[in-house]
Structure formats: structure tokens, C-alpha cells
Image 1 (spheres, one colour):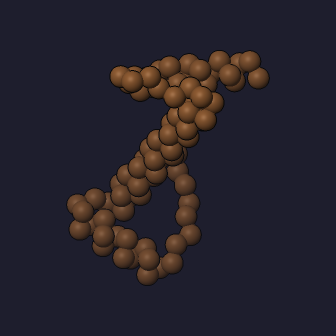
Image 2 (cartoon, one colour):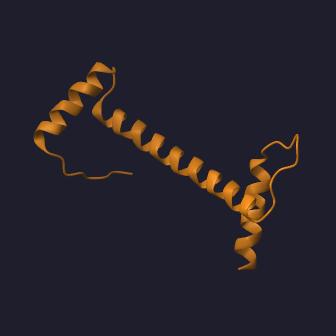
Length: 82
């Protein structure tokens, strides 16, 4: 997907230099940043889901290990029931 951004000329030039210093094109550096940003949003959503479960009195038992599939299954079930 293509996007268009408005950026100050000086910022753009500094960003190009920074990307070049990392051995990347500015395009690749922006893609990498957006992927990192999206990954952080996903991690934040999982953390919030765990907090929500804990507030409902469903805190893990000793020895319990996080199961992402279980969390997503419960989330899907709630959406279907809503």
C-alpha cells in the first residue's frame, strides 16, 4: 500500500541521512518503524486483555503459563455472543 506524508524539508533530509547511516533507504526505515509500531499496539492489546481477565477474578493459578490461543479464542467467543 502506498501512503503520502507531509514532512518538513529539514526533517526529511535528516531522516534520509539517519536511514542511510543504518544502511537502509528512508522507505525501508519508515516501513520498519510502522511494523514496530503495529507490533507494540498488538502487545498492548494482549496486556490489556490479561489485565481485564485479572480484574474479573480470573488470575492465573500457580504454574500457569500464558496461552495466546486461549485469549484469542475467548475474545472471538465474546464477539460472536455480542
